[in-house]
Amino acid sequence: MITTSQYVQIDQAAASVGDRIWAQIIDWIVLFCYSVMTFIFFDTFHELMNAWTVLIFYVFPILFYSLLMEIFNHGQSLGKMVMKTRVIKADGSVPTLGAFIMRSMLYIVDGPSLGFIGLLCMVLNKNNQRLGDLAAGTVVVKLQDYHKIQVSLDEYDFLLKDYKPHYAQAADLSLEQIEIITRTVNVPRKDLRTAALSEKVQQKLGIRRTEPTDTEFLRCIVNDYQYFALEAV
Image 1 (spheres, rainbow, N blue to C red):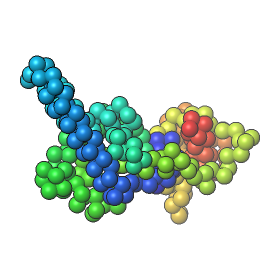
Image 2 (cartoon, rainbow, N blue to C red):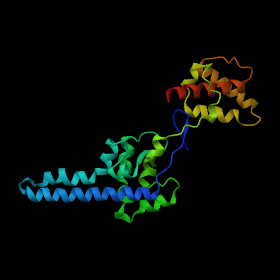
Image 3 (cartoon, helix red, strand yellow):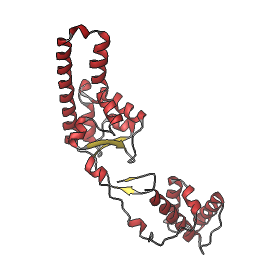
Image 4 (cartoon, rainbow, N blue to C red):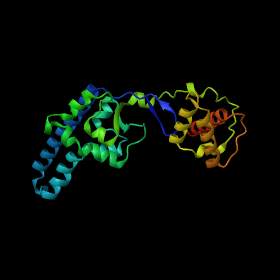
């Protein structure tokens, strides 16, 4: 389970170790076939063979295959496409260029060159992340689960069709601030803390509460924030 930047919880199933192994094997087969085809091409048209053509058409494609595929194909190599998996950020968002580069660079450690350390790492952590994923903050997930995200609305049963937010300024708060407010209103014996937080929120947003108690005001702020967040989903 992850929480998006819109404060919505979604189900996310990490790809199994088996899925990841098969995806990698398929990618190796693709690279092997490409290598054979390239060798045949240069053997046939040997006059085209020089340091630059070998570098551009053989070395670079093989070295940067996974990186370029994942960057330009929404987190999928050909192996991941076959196995219906995809690379995403641990919070459910699209990985940045830096994240793709980081996980690609650490394949030098994770891959066969150093005894498949990444495989051992995947077996030992619950999200089946290799070292590159841990460093980049990424997770490989099952594509069908990623496309069929189930948004849990259990917390949002107050959002009826005719719900009207009280404070539009609530949308300006950050997820971290909303989490603090939520934790505060759920803490037993919270009168002093709730009153202080209520005052801070009112000052920050430039509003005055109309609710009879600080707790009701803060709950209203959270509800309004979630309303605007869901409107953006």
